[in-house]
Length: 229
Image (cartoon, rainbow, N blue to C red; front, side, top):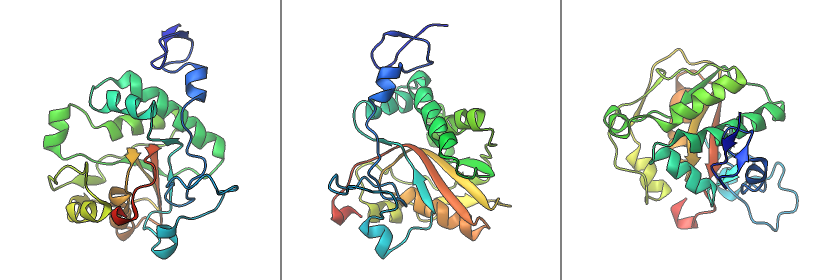
């Protein structure tokens, strides 16, 4: 079956992105091994290198998997998916993420946990983009999605434009966890920005019994000013 590429509109056998557009996505290869923060290009061999914040104050989560930078055209594709309700723009990125994870050979988590939305926000948007991504990943990787384990209990202010410190304050008491929690879980989201949501959820999940918490996302934002960490 022939589809139109969501990147260039040329006919393609792939569901969403043609091979050329998929290969041109901005990769997040030179990144912190813990939080996937993009590092400077001066680091020749970034494998295993940690960023300053992860060295000075290791996060609660064990690692972030985010293969692409949140820059054009990834940011545009995610925006169309998330705010334009165009699932055709998000599904190919989720498929590529699944292939990255499968090719890594790393041990699979026991379940995927999508970052929850507050019920009122989810009703307004019509869907939870993190849950959509998790379901696509589950189909590809044969890992179950368990959405009921984490709930968004507090309607926090929007995170957009806030620094990491402000986001952490904003998220206090936002999530509730109902166990039992498997030992190895992966939290799924669309974008990791400051890592505040990942940090808060990882703390809650580990307190509830998880031993390994990974964060799986489509993209990671570029480096932010030190004042925002």
